[in-house]
Image 1 (cartoon, rainbow, N blue to C red):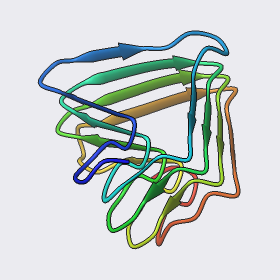
Image 2: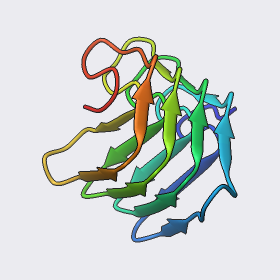
Image 3: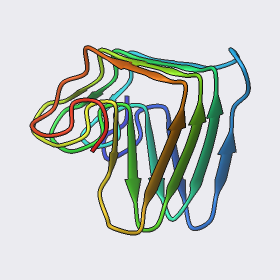
Image 4: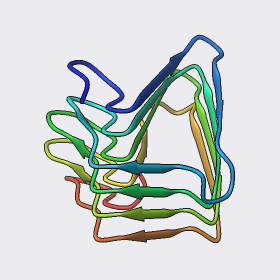
Length: 120
């Protein structure tokens, strides 16, 4: 649990987080924004991971929050039961026009948000 952003991980200013097949379970984390991971001008590369039951308690990005030209590149992960209580992007949320989410063969199910329950 974080008090500002990124319940499990926060990356900023060009940071890179890389996770590999079935090695990371981002589960039951919470923060006001970016329940599991919050990226600010950073990159997350994820393959075969689980984002489950994470919560943004007062903002965007229940699972992953992307701000300021951040990028999420994901293959084969599961985004399940993540919640943005009073925001957008239950599974993953790109909150500026320069942030990018690329997802291949991933599943988004049972996520909740005001807009974009899976991806915003």
